[in-house]
Image 1 (cartoon, one colour):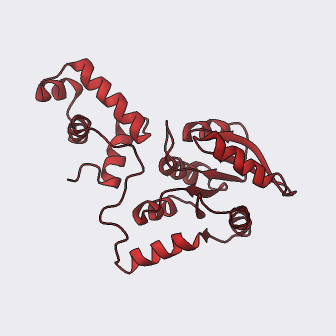
Image 2 (image 1 turned 90 degrees about the vertical axis):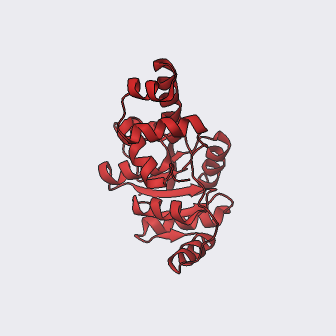
Image 3 (image 1 turned 45 degrees about the vertical axis):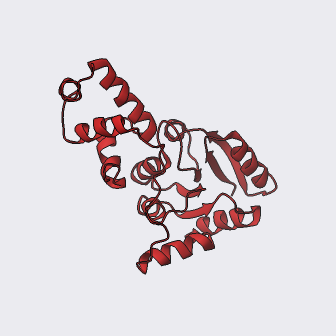
Length: 216
């Protein structure tokens, strides 16, 4: 039986490269591609797939949140995370949210195909480097001084606004507290939503807490 695969990445070059890899495999077929997590969810509402090859740093809805939603709403869909990001906290969060494999983007065709087949065989797969990072983390060894966030950096003002949102201040109260206009607060809120790939205030709060975005 041919396995249907959806590729989600905000770089068309990556999508085209994976499609080319899969084109020689008779039992694997790329049936769709998406440039954001929201596009993945929109597609799955109407058409099933067996696997989503998922980037993490995407607009609209990032890969971490997308993976969490897939685990909740489409548990039968396998998720293979394909990313340049190597931070232990991020890898563990993807696995916690239901990813069956984590492969780094510099992997070759043979490794990507191997990862796909292992997942379909009911196994998990991690790149060798990813396995080492996980083991080092479990052993209490820090691979970096500070884990890198998968999201674009927030400005000082955006962090101030986000902190007040987390503390449940209204837009009007934030405007008064920071001595800026109501419209400026809304602009900052909209920019933060885009940067964090969240869809609403609840998503902002959850992401800020999970990633420690307000920690100095």
